[in-house]
Image: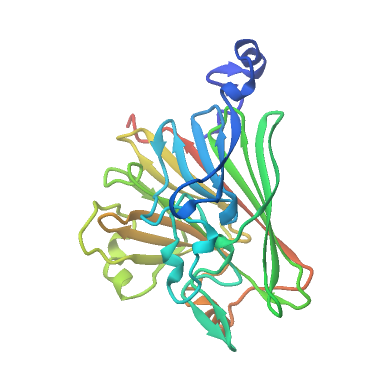
Length: 344
């Protein structure tokens, strides 16, 4: 699936300039502030590529993704909580779910993901704190043939971690793909455990029993009893069901280079591909939630294939450690295009 970045609505850039008063007629970056409800006061940045891709970024939620549409088709699952401002975040127990707005990306980490755990009196809340931390936007512009937004997110505390996420989103003018480049740096004075999970949430109408799921992993492992009951159907997209219990599977992608996972719906002629570098993200957690009202497929690249939170991951000897002054980088691409099965 290629990104048709060379043209804008079938015209070369030089020709586009002859036909518009300003490039913002077809491609732009808009800045907004929410005025109502649980999101009141939070910032929102909207990217329009001119290739049918429209993206909403949330600077007060680590510059994560919210609503994303491709040629008018909604891609992301949005939860009933909405994209709440970070002031409403609840750190205790499963409080993360109270402000989990969904969106096409909710970043989890930077020192833990998974269930809430306690390690030596230090609490690590469910899915970590970074996704409810406000960022400092350092750049947001259309530059040459690219739309670029960069930000810095600092997750820090007194006597605890001091981790910095430097995040860059970019897309080509006229393009149909979104690029994410992250660097996490340990600016603390001690080595720090580092866990990150990219919680990508796909919803209806792309997610539908008529669509197909592609996860070409080396091995699949169910998380728990509920997942084991559906292990033979992990790759099937089912219709919404009352009383459905979530099923989570771990997919091993070690040594696979650039992994490509996908959801393809020929009925609406739309395909989504998530690409990620398995050198730093060697596994993917699949969250299969086929409930009524909570109808979502989570495709979640991780830097460690663990379901047990910070304490359990350390106890298993699997906790990644970011040494003082060191950094690690991650690369993910979100690509959109026509279905590969629409004409088959």
